[in-house]
Length: 187
Image (cartoon, rainbow, N blue to C red; front, side, top):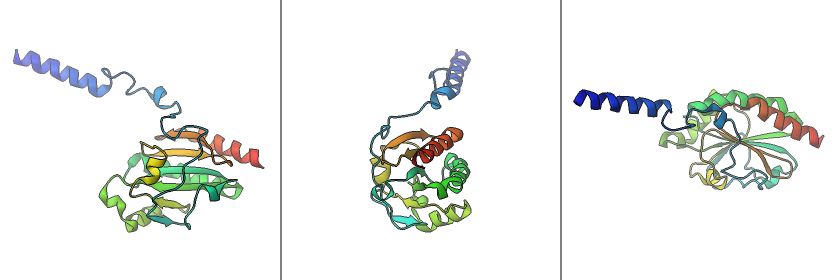
């Protein structure tokens, strides 16, 4: 009887871990659809609030960036998925910065060691990040965007409206196309 109970328990745990019990947990198609549970699409982008430090820039505001296309990238250097997206974000910045794209990284820490300005500065250097980065230790900008995940990208149009949102890795071509389309519309 004990062996049978152990076998059934192991099978149930295995099903839960693989997603067989919770539909959609491993469904890549479900994760690839735009998420609008946070700051809603076409909503005016919230400002950068409660920022502890700015790196690579003077303090910025959404109002100051009107007329430009803005990519806001929520990340933290201790997040593997965030680090995996950084090459795309830095390449996008290099490709479009002279055409009017502004990238603003919002470093919102998950762990206490990520709150150190020196550690953030070292991470920026290590990853070759030259675009503006706001240190959001108290999650005030994170909360203003109603963000829930690392990494998360928000594309803001020239009128200050959120026109695209993505959480997690991937969709790099779609992000690039969205930025290019917005920049071409303003040329």
